[in-house]
Length: 228
Image (tube, rainbow, N blue to C red; front, side, top):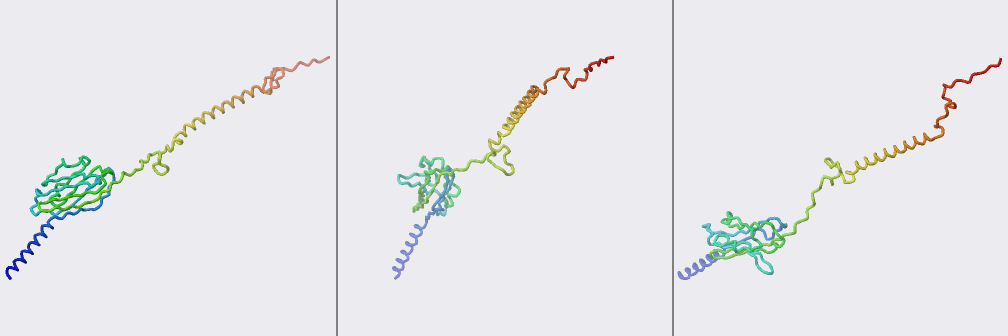
């Protein structure tokens, strides 16, 4: 009877220890899907359970981008120390992680200058002294949207603060008005000159002989000869 109880206790203890070991490491991803725009930045985050002593010497992490052709390593941590030599060249200089939150069981990868080719599936494997777990997420990077060009002052119409020059045709209007004024003066001068010339040539304006000029009062009347 005593032997049977000891066997049961041993089995229960073994089950408990097995459960503790298998549940000692839990890995989760903050978001299962990320959406970003080209040339922008994004942060991918995973969480995992940590050791009670807070030591990172037995922590190994590998984060990879999965494609149909091959795997691209974007982050490698060996015994709590980053190994940049393992990083693929396509991610060189574009991936950094927060060391301060790593002891808290948080892996935060900051990706900068995103490209559309960065779209895909990302897998993060976490290894400890006795277990290994992984979680994946999806990143979709869209092309940069075409932004409207800034509106120039000449393109604004009406309203307060609108440009006084307006369109190019309006800007040229004062020059045309000056040209019209000059042409008008030339035409007016030509007409006045023509009228003056015609008036001088008119028969009514020809000078009369002195003796026929009715306005000439200097002429003395012919003397009257009286016959005796």
